[in-house]
Length: 110
Image (cartoon, rainbow, N blue to C red; front, side):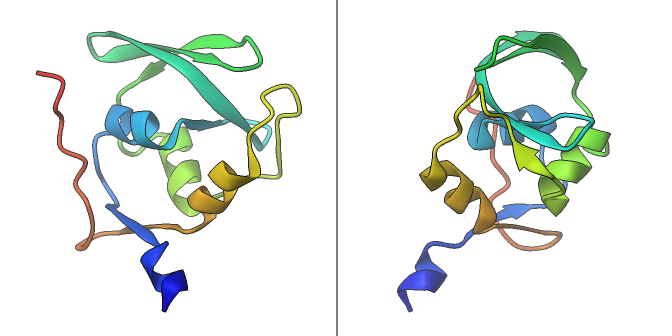
């Protein structure tokens, strides 16, 4: 029964920036999973800096490539420079996204 208590459920179409804040992982286009160091918000966009030093702008979109890849857990490998710990990967593997059940990740930044 302890294995069930480690499962995390989130709503499928939550705010993308709140999801990134919670998971702190970014899937690159080539299938590599990176760890997020910082997120700076600039209106509808955010500047993300990874642990390996990459920095880029992303748009707040629930249906973007990155959002879909995070929800579906599509990745080939993890970034060697980011050194994502095993506990974080295990926690991410036990995270489930459903349409009608789970945390809505309410915005508390106001």
